[in-house]
Image (cartoon, rainbow, N blue to C red; front, side, top):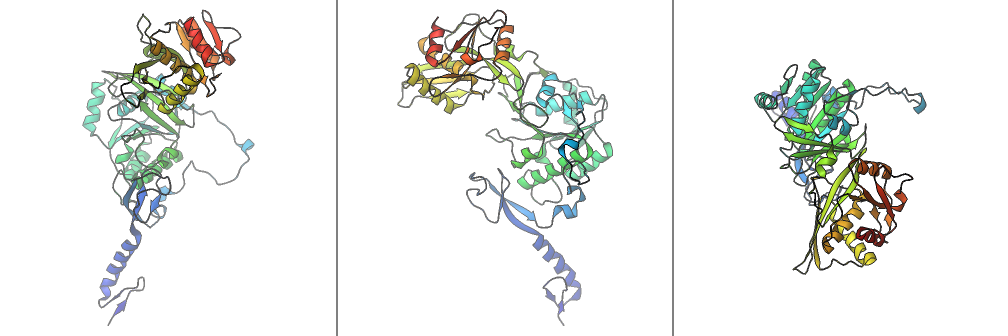
Length: 484
């Protein structure tokens, strides 16, 4: 006799084997192979060289995908933000409460976060290996643990290693709670028991969930693990820090959706071999974007730099050709930085254009403007540009200072040490105004500068004390002013 299983299209001569076949059939129905893009998390049934979702090449990785909805198996996956009654409200009827922030004990980190840690906020921090991600978070939690409950979850180090670092940095160990775990369900279970005000997970690439069968660090594991942690943080009001690895290109490893899940994304910038560390907020729902925090790595961890402009202006008393000081705007404050240029005769058919801290394509464009509107050609010259201190400048206010440094190096004539320059250069050779001009001039006057060359539209009604301001309309006028 042949027995037919009522739950699957399987026939067997033994009735007891029917349940086994049902289990095997269920597993085969649930699990299948998919290819997930590491850049945009798009999924495809077969491998292909280019992702059709984002256009990136060689980003598809094989994963085992479970067809059973994880939310049906895991109740924690339901919902995302804080608990709501699902009613629709008018915007004007929603009560606004002051957002209570928790100080990290480091003013520079508080500045980058927008004033401190927000209850229920999720912060993703990334950077090169050894640059100080774990160090600054360990310092932060030991400071906060003196007043509030905290939990440090490490998936990469043992408890002894974390303790050794804290002892070496001479950090207070009282009330500091540690957990070594990589399973996200167990981490959340421990957080429910401990009820910390702030939790650190180091790092998200080592965390995995039981409801996805792929390996830890894969796109689906990072996405689902982060989603569970973010949901718990929003629903419980716990502040959460996630440490993320970076790729060799400097971007956060894992799916791009990871940056969309969190409230703030912080990046460590600068050379890991340098003494100084820069933290920049590239996304912040609770503060200014592109805010910059400056730290110095010491034997006792990361120490905040109270006057960042001073470290970027470590100049010789004697002015040197190819050096110009500008005032850049980082987040909510101005910074004085030195832009250096070296122009040398080329010995090849293709002159080199090398930039450190500035955009290379913009340098090529500005050199064309310099040739067209100031009759200064560099087609037979190698041009090397550097921003002192490892800072990266993205704003166009550096255009005029960069060209002044190039002309200074080309003509071997130094720009005076007490002169600052800033302004955007257009394709027509015009000097365009930049934002926060008055605050930039005030910062320059505070540091003892005597002369400023700025766009005419940024001319103040009353110059700050001790500062003489010259407004220029075009590139030729700015170069002539430097000759005086």
